[in-house]
Length: 338
Image (cartoon, rainbow, N blue to C red; front, side, top):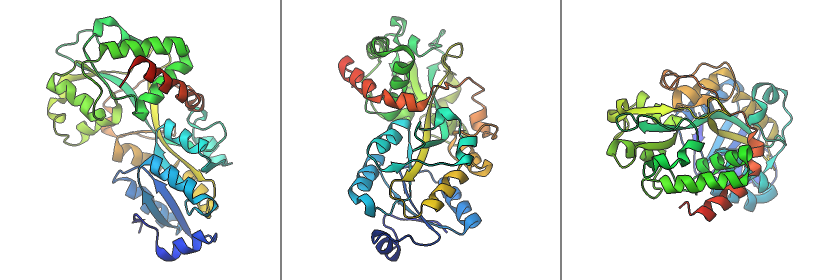
């Protein structure tokens, strides 16, 4: 049975900190906090006989912890959400390159780090939602969010949000810094309110009438289809959505992913776990349990996610996008995106 715990088993921790790997164990540092991930861990344990120990926390805190632990870190795997955090872990030196034929074959190249230090295992499309009663001509592209025609209509999260950071970094990758800055300034001018809350709060803004257009990852809305989300599910029929840039680059994709820790004491087990995450059963858990899109092509998606329709995703290299994250943050600061 998986042991989700804030501290590793005492005996295992002592052995690991002494530099010795504990046989048939795997130590995961994870900032994912979804209940259905328990199924992933339990199935892996049953299939392999490897016991998983887990530390959960904020991604930046886990990365800092791994840095502080250094060569004595017990971490074998880091799992987190969004390209920006995975790249932060790489730059912090807490990951290592992995050479795996399975990962190379199953994970599309654009969802991998150029140095194979991190891999994406599930995706969320960052798309446009709108109030069907008030918006006759919703934006069809990300660029259109900056059109003065939508002044005072848009709800979107803050510049500190990793999803927005990656979206802007992708726009920089596609159109360059100057055009991306003009876009960001235009979105700020069109905001209905100062950025606040999470993606669900942007969607609730449509329900409350605070805004007519919202930007959110798909899984927040799909969740309101699969289960009851207060302040959203009862209003869901009034909300329409657009997968942007279908005649261009395609819809921007955020991801969840992971990599092998730089000083993994159980490296072989860590690689096995990453490879397991590409299996059809694991990929199905991501979709059915958390309303995400699989990273592996051909895996069936859940009914709630499928109900949003098919679309063209942006296949820009997320490794290239990650390189533009500092530029994106600079633009946010310059245009006053709070």
